[in-house]
Amino acid sequence: MSAAEETDGESSPWGEVTPEAARRLLVAAVDAFAERGYHATTTRDIAGRAGMSPAALYIHYKTKEELLHRISRIGHDRALLLLETAADSDGTASERLADAVRSFVRWHAERHTTARVVQYELDALGEEHRTEIVALRRKSDAVIRRIISEGVQAGEFDVPDIPGTTLAVLSLCIDVARWFSAQGSRTPDEVGDLYADLVLRMVAAQR
Amino acid sequence: MSAAEETDGESSPWGEVTPEAARRLLVAAVDAFAERGYHATTTRDIAGRAGMSPAALYIHYKTKEELLHRISRIGHDRALLLLETAADSDGTASERLADAVRSFVRWHAERHTTARVVQYELDALGEEHRTEIVALRRKSDAVIRRIISEGVQAGEFDVPDIPGTTLAVLSLCIDVARWFSAQGSRTPDEVGDLYADLVLRMVAAQR
DNA sequence: CCGGACCCTAAGCGCTTGCTCAGGTTCGGG
DNA sequence: CCCGAACCTGAGCAAGCGCTTAGGGTCCGG
Image 1 (tube, rainbow over the protein chains, first blue to last red):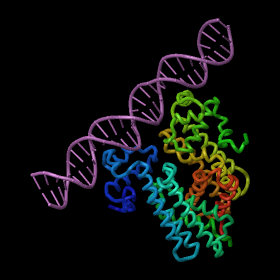
Image 2: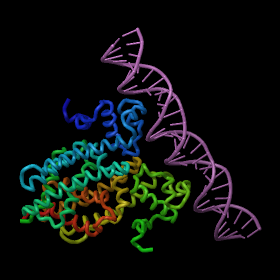
Image 3: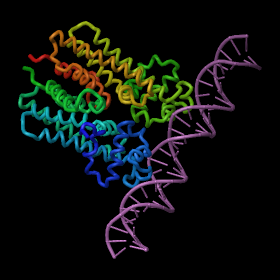
Image 4: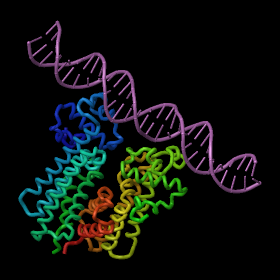
């Protein structure tokens, strides 16, 4: 079996979700939410995909919303880790920005099923859970802004509007989750490389 | 009542929707769909916002999905018109690309309520309606690609991957509908100008 | 004054939803 | 061989869903 034939690379990242039955339900929920959206997905559908009865879901999760929260939390943690790793590495601001965009985009493409849920179902979360997740997003924003600011100070970048450009960079990356398809002609690596190049052009000092 | 207090600037563009009661329902549906999403919106909610009983909706529209289709169709027509106007005007490829991005982004910001429905509720459409709308999207893609190709041939642009860059440009613009808020610190005009500049940097030939 | 076209509502039908609960199955330790 | 803990299911409840239908106001031509 080739690694590329894996239905969706959503199996390994959920290793932290223990007991195995809870993980099966969570993976089923990711697929269902990504395909139909949170509100259009029924608890019966999720349980069915995991090979269980509707009632089994409520042994492992209090509500359908708790499932979404777990998915969203783990996904945001993972995405933020990718950005921070790139930002804290050695190298010029250009190298670190390219690294950050490349791995962030690659994640959105490779795990586009998860990413779609993480990025577009925020409003379906309850009040408390949503504020928790929004805080994580602000951290992502801060990471990118820091790299860009450092690049400007080092004279590598020419960016008139740092907050606006930060927003645009993140925006560009996040939207990958909306349009990326495994059936498409581009691999996640190719999209990552392309986007890293485009972002560097956006911030590069004119010569 | 001040003009700034208007709930959302979605009133004038729907002039083509003819009995007035049908237009009120449609505007109410746009607000509701944008706020909660199509699937989380009930027909009772739509009718309520329009000041009517639930049954009144079905005098003007056959189904809830037909409402979404009408919104989506009109919105896509409008957005495509903006792009084509910019593409067919006189001027260099740079000027036309900047114009296209500026007005496309401005529309997504100004009418972000409508745009959110138009861009993110595509999957909620029925089979036939979805294919119709997807065709309109491909036209938008073709318009941007044409401008970029012409810019490359004229030597104004340096773009290694034309389809990929086209995708990125559209992607960047569309995502404005996701994050833009009227309460934010940026006006639609400012965002349009910023994005037009960023896109030109992405395609500009290095000097 | 009448009659019908038009537009709307109150009431509710059949179905699906998120979620519950009493009880059955499985299994390791004594 | 039995026991209790862990895990799961069948059946179903109350609420809410999209949508239908019978009928009541309002207004205009005659």
